Each structure stands twice: as C-alpha cells, then as structure tokens.
Image 1 (cartoon, rainbow over the protein chains, first blue to last red):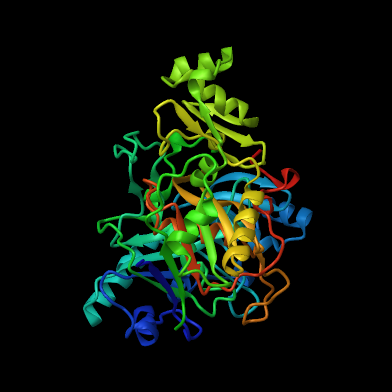
Image 2 (cartoon, rainbow over the protein chains, first blue to last red):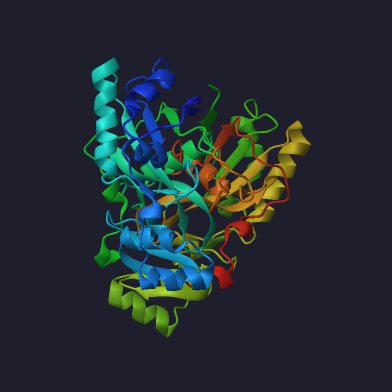
Length: 247
Length: 247
C-alpha cells in the first residue's frame, strides 16, 4: 500500500519584494526535494516576492467603488483595487464581488487580499503571470540543485453552491493539470463519462491540509504522486467561455 | 517535517447489493487503520452495497426526458432517472443537466452515473443519506476493531468556471467538515477574511490522487491529519440558499 505524502515546508520567514523565493524554499526544503516531487506554493509569498502589493493610501476610488463600499461597510480603496484587477464582474451583490481576473480566473475580489500582509494599508494581488512564476521557480530549483519537480502556485477560492474555500492551482509548471480518462473503459467495459480530473486542483487542495491559514506554512511538498509531465498551464483549468453555463 | 499520508485501499472486489462494506474494507485495510485516521470511500461502492441501482429497462421516460434525450443523443431512460433524482434543475442546456439533488447538492446529472456499474443497463444513484452511510461505516469499524476514525463518502463533481472534476465530500461522520478561522488573526494582527476552509472536500480531493477513475481503488486512508472531531455533516458543505449567488 504505497501512497502519497504531503509535507509542510516550515520555517519560511516573512517574504519581501525582491526576495529570492527559490533560495528561501531551498533553504527550508532543499534536503527533502527530489525529482518527481510536486512543490505547491501559495501565491501570497510569490506575489510578495514579485512586489504585487498595493499601498491603499495611493489609491483614488472611483464612484462605483465608493458607492459599493459605503453600502457594505468596505474600504473604498480596496474595492477600487478589486475592480482594477477585474476584467469582468460576474456578481456584485450583498457585499460580495465575484469577478473574472485578467488571467481568466473567476473568484471573489479578483484575488485581492489584505490578510497576511504587513503594514495595515497594503493589499496583495495575484501574480501577474502565475505560470511564469511557477516556471521560474521550477527552473531555479533545477539549476541550483538539479531536481526536476512540478510546481503549482495556489490560491484559495470559494465555489458556487458549496460552503467554504478550497485551495486550487492558478499557476502550473512541469505537469499537465488535467488527467483525461475519456476513451478509457471501466472494468465492465463501459466508457468513462465526465472523466477529466483536475488533478492540479486536487494537489493544491491536499497541500492546504498541511498549510493552515495563517500563512506560516506557505508551501508543501507532495511525494510519490505520478503526475503526467508536460507543458501544462494554470489556464488549462479555466472553463472555456463557450462551454461555461455560469458566466 | 511531519506531513500527512494518503494511502490507497487496494484489492476491493466488485461490491454487490447487500454486501457488508465495513467487512470488505476491514479485510483490505484493517491492519492499517488507526484511531484518528480519515477513511474516504467513493459513493459508488456505498451505493452499490445499499442497492441504489436502477435497471433502465424498467424506467418509463417522461416527455421532457424523451425530448432532451432525442435532442442531445442521450438515453431517455437515464435522463428520466436524473430528473427523478433532482428537486430543482439549475441548468439544462447543451446536453448537460446541472441540478440540485434531494440532499441539496448541486451537480451534473443529480449524481446519476452509468460508469463502473456492471450490466450495461444499470445506473447508480447517490446514497439516500450519505451521512448515515458514513456514520454506519464509522460505527461498524469502531465496533469490530475498536478504532475511532472519521469517514467521508465522496463523489466527483464539476465546478462552475473551472475545467475538470474534483472529489468532494457528500457524507461525513466523526469530524467537522469546515474549519473556521474567522476571528483569528494573521501574524501581522490582521483579522483573517474569507477563511472558512472546506477541509472535508480537500481530504476527498487528496484521496482521489491515489484512487484513479476506474474504481479499482474505491477507498483511501489519510493519516496524521488533525481533523476536528464533532457531529459534522455533508450538508454543512452546501451553501445556504439565501447566501447562494448562483442559484
């Protein structure tokens, strides 16, 4: 009975703009990293290292942001940042903004988040190109210690119809995020239906189980998962607009 | 660096109506089971043991089922079963039926599935009461080998806006499926937002990584996950209608 292991990467210090995230992760997890592992990193530390932070004191809110914030007791400057990070508003109701980010992800507040950010007037954005962030991390680990791993950048998203948030993959490097069983047959010879599995989201979800929410553990290592190598992207996990029944 | 382990429960034979599922699982995983483990079981074997199977030859399709099936090349009897298992249709478009089951889950085809079922003219329904199924399994394991575990009954659901399906929890026993961090503060003293984590769904997702889709591995054991004990329910994971922006 050989299973997978999900290990927390502990002891990561507060990450600052310009920090070498690969070096920080290697310092804490380098001795445990092996080729074939999956490294899941929460976007928050990636965004911080990349300087994807906005000082709210420099943000001038629009009338829409001011109105929505006043109605729902929000900071109008933070609402403004959410609107700027959105390319389409899916729902804007009851104090909640569900929008499509410039990457195409549909999530609350366009991924803009004020928790786990120092300062009190700073919010954190999603990485500009999470796939690129993942690829750079993967390449740096290969170059520095010669391991070939898959890298997933994660965020926690809410879901339609279900309570609670779960970790999902927003950036991917070195693996295919979907496993397609279509065309295969079950043990009874029946063709498998509805059988494209979002394994990168499941890996991200598994990693959250060792992370906790206070971001003191912003990364996890998954061992023995036989992922399919290839040029996968976090965008593979976005439903094509033409097939999306919930635009 | 102590993490969690996700172990497949292998060698489970084809489950038939009336089978003692606890005994079957004990036979394959009993020696590995310890108090504090989480046992995740796919609903398919639970439904089979409980006889939640429908012989399509005995189903008389309604005009609605006939029309939708004819338009989209489906079996009208299977569409009829989907409609009967639904209490509300959320979307019925492009050959896809997204509906709310009698339990309150929103998913494709009301959880009705023809794969991994022997016979060729039989479909499998969701368990009548997945929480009860989970509790019975949990109680049987406690009674027979004295272990106290959490049990999750899982199914694979699609998601709005995202490609691919992931495993989620539809029945829960012995644990709280949501972990609520609201009121806690991050290391910077900022109150955590949007911080109710659907950990039972994340455990279900993690278990899928060792299961595969052909159902030869219909259960997994998760070790070292410090779940919160309590009277949790799969229904805790359903968004309350009054808060649901995507009804």
